[in-house]
Amino acid sequence: MSVTPYVEADLDAAFAALGDRTRRAIVGRLAQGEATVGELAAPFDMTHQAVSRHIGILRRCGLVRQRVDGQRRPCRLDVERMQELAGWISEQQREWESRLNRLDDHVAQLREMQSR
Image 1 (cartoon, rainbow, N blue to C red):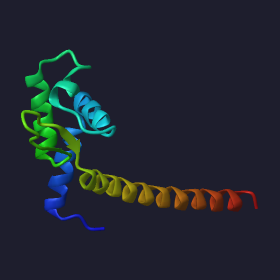
Image 2: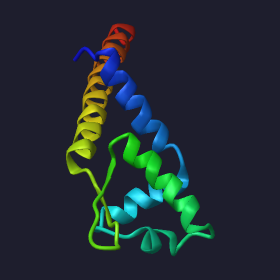
Image 3: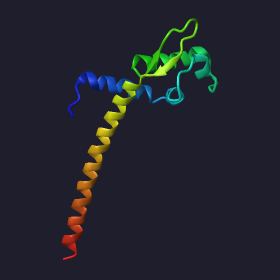
C-alpha cells in the first residue's frame, strides 16, 4: 500500500497523540463507552482543564468525538478512525511476518547447505 503525504500526516498526528500515557488511558476508558470530561478526569491527579487539553488533542487527530447533550459534552471514540489505525498496524504486521518468514526460510536453506 502506498501512503500519501496526507495519510502520513494523519497517521503521524494519531500516533503522536497516542504517544502520551494519559491520552492512551483516556482512549482505553472511552473504549468502554461514552464519558464526560469529569468522568475521564476522575482517575487522574490533574485538573479538568488539563484533561480537556488532552481530549482536544485526541479530537484534532480524529480519535475522539464530542457532542453536546444539554450542559454535558460526552466524549466517545471515533470507531472508524480507530479501525483505520488498526488496519495500518495490521498491514505492517503482515509485512513484517512475511519478511521474517522469508528470513526463516533462508536460514533453513543455509543450515541445510552446511549440513551436507
